[in-house]
Length: 363
Image (tube, rainbow, N blue to C red; front, side):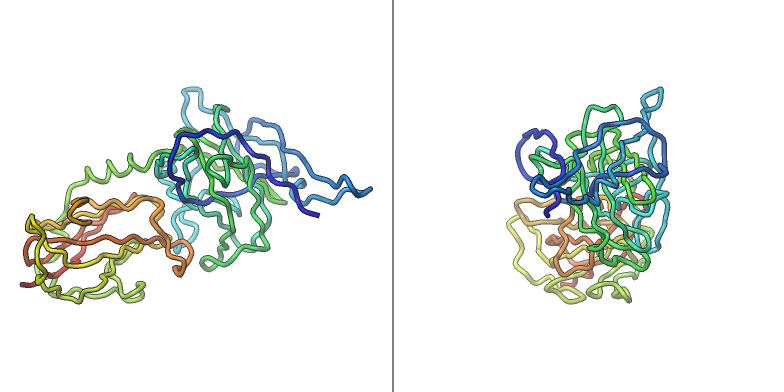
């Protein structure tokens, strides 16, 4: 007997492309609730109309009433704290054995705004220890907006995380096969994750990644963090994928060029030379947007001649290769320079800034 499809929410067409990301299913049964509360109706249970005895629905046993908190008296969002629960992952909400894994920082969850009906929150779903079934639902704390799952035009209002299908992500943590979690607007939202033993509440302020990018671009460049002779000793990072540069969470790998790089190609009409294709690899310790700039006086231009930019912004939903380990993100871009020299790059993340030598260009 097939289980019923999750309840689906209203659609709202704004137009355009669908963002990428992942989120989970809603919850049921009675058990301890981790967090404050306020209620919402439960979804329908299932049964067989052909059989005399209805088929048991294991998800119905998890579908408890929503018990999300209220906004503060001043309208503030009572966000859930995140802590470093694994050295291999970005900070995760606490507590809870099944939690979302995304671009959380200072109470906010950053997501890329797209011209789609429902934007993706770009969440993974992970379980601590032995993964169990979980049901996920959510809405804004003011009660005006839902969190949807799956399709960008007609999202479901709950998501089911099957513990039997979860796979190991890093030691001690499993990754669920999950649908995309979506919102239509920024605001204060709560998720309720119901397992057989508890209901976990995660509250966050959904914010556009552009806000974080603006803050990172305002940080000063730090060329003095790079030694004067640094380009003479550009070394691949031991243990990094593809022999990449950097100590992480962001790494740089060069494609189609050696080190040093010869400035031998014919320049474009405005005097810039394409010297390399850059592949940026972001490991699971960082989920937010990434800003990359030249940290030296000699400028690097990213992209082709028609879409050149001096600030490279990697979105929250950076492309993930199929052969990459789960949780890694990657992004490629051309690198153009005007003259030979030692080129350093500054990498700004939500929580840190680093500078390292990246390109040694010779005549």
